[in-house]
Length: 253
Ligand SMILES: Nc1ncnc2c1ncn2[C@@H]1O[C@H](COP(=O)(O)OP(=O)(O)OP(=O)(O)O)[C@@H](O)[C@H]1O
Image (cartoon, rainbow, N blue to C red; front, side, top):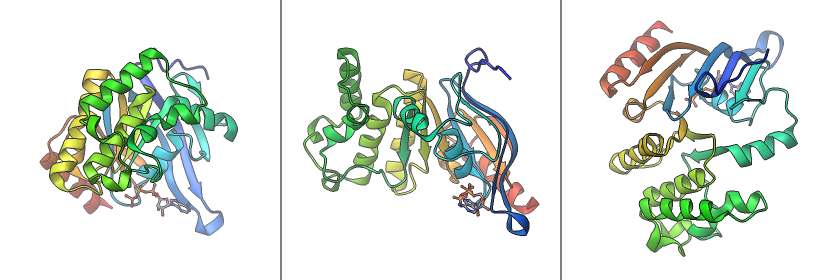
């Protein structure tokens, strides 16, 4: 099936995606025939109760895990069925990650952490890319921290370094996995505002997995998963509305 995701305004798409773990009676269906698209330039939150399949969906869309059946596209590239070596290169060039635990390299300073995706790709940034990285560093307030190691920074500062690293190569899609999970609420709000700004001002597509209604309320769109299926799809919602939807989902389980 040839699908041009770009024509659909989508940066990523899954069709009839299922993921099963184990075999026989012990089989767990983590994702059950999901078909969704992530829209280009949007900040999308993926929400759902514990065990609903959020991380599994994100890992498969990011090429970190394989599907049991169904198809997965990043841009116009079908990644389902790709060899691991191809996936590694694709992730390096076209995907950015922001994790709850920041995942910075402790022995590298801030500048080296931010430049790591270029380093891993075995190349120097072009002048235009370096200007973009410099802009990110300045706008994320990291200019006077460039020589520091991660342990010398606060949690919020470390997450800002991780965001600069994720946006630096202008990836097709940034995946954020509970990016505010390790931060206090005020610092968490700042990080969410930065992600929302990246989508609005830089047209950066972002998919964020979270179980926090306040975090999801910063997103342009919220996909709700329950039991491995998409059960709701909203364009913006308040934290209160999201909590109500989540409560309804949990009582229906
Ligand atoms: N490697 C694995 N082996 C077996 N089962 C797994 C594996 N990974 C996930 N699962 C199961 O798949 C289902 C979905 O898990 P997943 O981690 O995607 O949920 P989640 O919504 O991200 O949960 P949480 O919010 O608790 O992180 C769960 O029932 C989980 O136990």
